[in-house]
Image: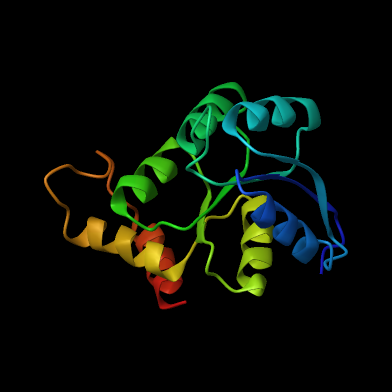
Amino acid sequence: MNDEIIRILIVDDHVVVRKGIKALLATEPTLEVLDEAEDGLEAVSKYEELKPDVLLLDLLMPKMSGFEVIRELKGKYPDVKILVLTSFAVDEQVFPAIKAGALGYLLKDSQPEELIEAIRQVHQGESSLSPSVARKVLQEVFQPGEKPLSPDPLTKREVEVLQVLAKG
């Protein structure tokens, strides 16, 4: 197991969520919460100041949405590693967040172990999706709606990875 410390910035507009996540992550010796932010503007500012390894980001926040945060940080820092942690798995949020550059998309009702594993995966540059989100992505790939997700189809390997993620 790699003992490298993963430095994290938690961004959520609900203080109880931030504190709960921070307490959970404090139980893991290889995870360090650098700071917290309560809105999108503060997220961008603190990211630029601290340069965390992983940005744990809610989507629906005041002042600047999580989508805007992803787009702005990806524009300035293409290597930024963002894990979305939200309550919603609706298409209108999943696909824009992933297309904007989030490496992971996890639901807040996930198990603590799933969050910790997702942070590690995103830190390694791997994608991490909640099983329900992975199923949505697969449905879009195999039965695209009126608007295609992307002009570039997924590779065979990307489809295999999504199928494994969808199974949990």
